[in-house]
Length: 134
Image (cartoon, rainbow, N blue to C red; front, side):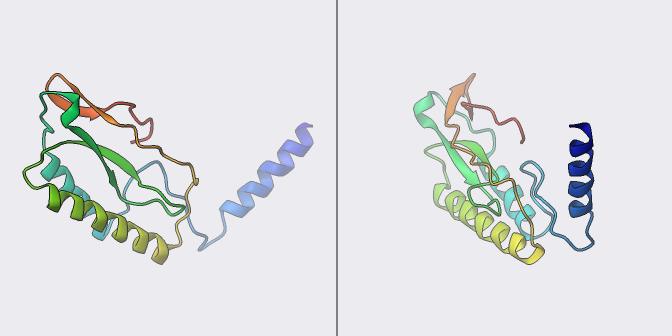
């Protein structure tokens, strides 16, 4: 059994060390490039995400994973003074990340990330189910 496991580990190591092979996306980090500026603008617009009740809290899917779905979710407060711009930036971040992944040949774990929802805690919106890899 140990011999089989050793062979499998060696084979996997050989597959991942090929020069020029696409690299998997780690966690939910955003690759350097166009999308990082868009994500920074989204974070600036979201701000403190102040709230009086959980009914005001929403989640915003940001970016895109190569296998589909967002890189991560951000909590935000509605009504947002610039909600249309915030939603447009989220769409732009998705398009930019899809283009970046296509150009670089990125791979991901293809793990589905469900919308965690958002709740108001101590006057700020936060994710209802915190992600373990943000």
